[in-house]
Image (cartoon, rainbow, N blue to C red; front, side, top):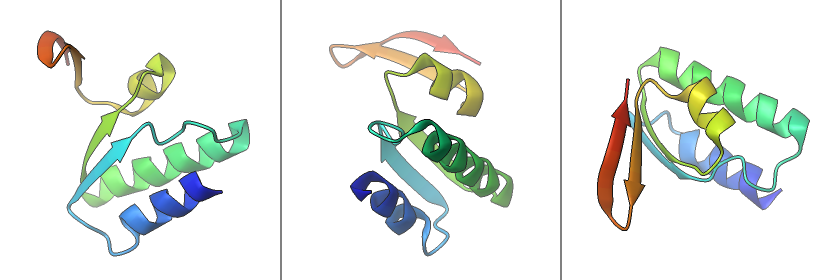
Length: 79
């Protein structure tokens, strides 16, 4: 529930830039679907979403670009 509240707080005022760290962590399957829908709506609205995640499925479903980092350095970029 805390994770969902944090996401709601992040998008409440329709910001142009949304920064998220592991947004689907500790959320049930239905919640993940809802969160992904919300992110898709925000993206279509024109928001830039920067998302940090270890979940490849989140990245593949949500991302226009994927930047892989290790120890603070970029090691791979996918578009």
